[in-house]
Length: 136
Image 1 (cartoon, helix red, strand yellow):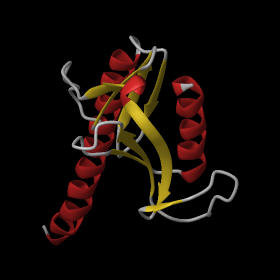
Image 2 (cartoon, rainbow, N blue to C red):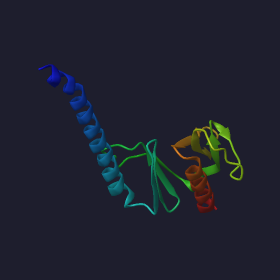
Image 3 (tube, one colour):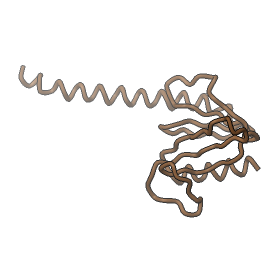
Image 4 (cartoon, helix red, strand yellow):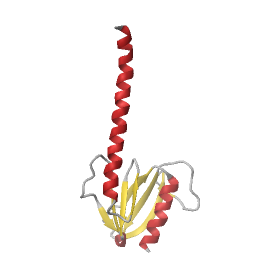
């Protein structure tokens, strides 16, 4: 009986890992279905982003992705900036560590800026360049 009680925590860890893997798989499947309608899309543990024409749609990844995620047009954007640790950085001088985000500032002053988080700095830099080129 003592041996059974010793194996119980290991069994619980196994089931926890199995559930975690299943949950992540469900997120990826939901993202795959969601991303089909976009020209370009990105999945990240922090955010998903999709681009169709000049329309940007973003949200948080999950097992179910709603159809009414926030979106905006690049025509309404004044400035696109890459932020690392909430500081603006040049695309030519990327740091190796930090928390990356792309910030969108609107022409209208009363509209708050939007930050979309990324886990990888080089990926955030590539998306910043891509979106700036798309904006024109």
